[in-house]
Length: 312
Image 1 (tube, rainbow, N blue to C red):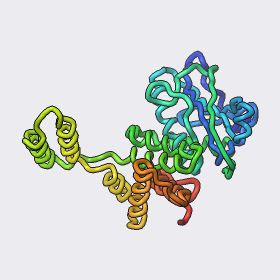
Image 2: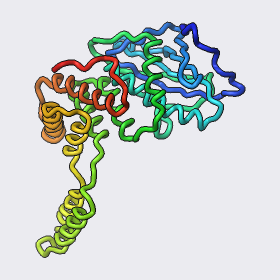
Image 3: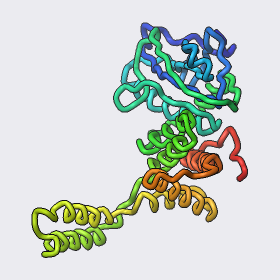
């Protein structure tokens, strides 16, 4: 097993029996240079991180699939390990955003894609690919980049983790359309809709009540229409998804052209899903949207991107 010369021995299993296990899918745009024995490196807070190459089926190998498990070792209690697991998830997602590579979580335990285990347990992960342009990443580089985000050490909103997961796995989709929708979903998950306030809510509630009491919509046969219109009125008390996305992008990127681009990209997304649009040159939108999302993550986390944003 490859190790950093300064890597200390993992804490004793007797005193620190708990470890975090994460199964990953690495997409076709990344090649983690692991030996069959894996690699071991020092991590934050006297922990060690172990990267293990897992077995891939012949079909998976033909599609450049790489199975990797990540083990963060050295915790004395299960609670301590669970807290570390949440930080590790953020760290691995940051590697995907910072390096502009595809990483997908394979297995979930409850709300999170990690398991608290003893250090002898492991599992696998999978990915898909067609064609290939990739970044080579050495194990020590992977570990260092993840450590920077881990040492960020702050709990983040669930919406950020959800967004980053959609982003990190979008390139694992089989088609450009699915990838584009995945990226727009990542941006949507990040853009939490805000309420317009109590006064607007009261106004819309009153209008909704008037609508429900209108003679024009009386009768059992008009109940579905009455309910639908009333519900839509009440939903207007908070901003639309589209407006929330525009606001979120403008909060972190002060560029009119970028904000306009994202709004137009969301329009394309809606037409694809609701009108069956066959968008041409979708890869151009996808490429630029990736960088917009990466810039937002960088601003939110206060961490520099390892791979630069590409000019449009």
